[in-house]
Image (cartoon, rainbow, N blue to C red; front, side):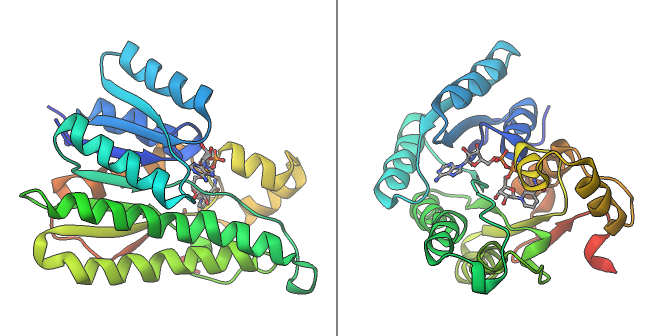
Length: 253
Ligand SMILES: NC(=O)c1ccc[n+]([C@@H]2O[C@H](COP(=O)([O-])OP(=O)(O)OC[C@H]3O[C@@H](n4cnc5c(N)ncnc54)[C@H](O)[C@@H]3O)[C@@H](O)[C@H]2O)c1
């Protein structure tokens, strides 16, 4: 019996990288998974693969920057499955690498819109659904090690990821007494399409990143999925308002 048996869980950005791996794992742990993303083909394929493996999953198009789209999908998940036990707000973009004098204002808006307002939209709609049901719920959002320390060249991304932690702590306090737990996960360097884009598939840049990590390697997406599945499950029943680094020791230095 899995740690998420019969839990209804919505995962944004679930068609790629960390979100996809988490969708696969939580389904294996018994959850009814709904993937929300803007990549319809990949989202449908991920859901189909999970179903082929004997688990429960579906895909719904959802743009996290569009409040009405988020509201519609969140309500649909609850009405289709009877409740919403958990959510993983993970959709994100990397944005450009540039010092602030070269950082375009439009890029700032775009990165904040997806990586912070997107999480706000999701949490707001999820709280509405979770409050209607007995038992509470568990919300996990993807911040980053970049949400805990400054990293030159990524002012938009770092600000948004710091914001995800502040937002998660605030909502955690607002709803702790209703047993709605709200946490953030802070990945270090994870082997996903995003990391490939950021390093431009350059072996030299990758080697530099790996040197910064005490464990001397990047992580597999499944290593983040394991932490998220735990936070979504009742195994973490007394954990709320935390920002959990999963980073091979990077920010402990
Ligand atoms: N890969 C890393 O090293 C790393 C490190 C720290 C944090 N993160 C964070 O992890 C999360 C997942 O990243 P990943 O590395 O798996 O990247 P990825 O590019 O593989 O996946 C990102 C997913 O988000 C979806 N998405 C983007 N904009 C969206 C929108 N407006 N609405 C709905 N979905 C949208 C994409 O379609 C994609 O499926 C992101 O929030 C990212 O910032 C990644």
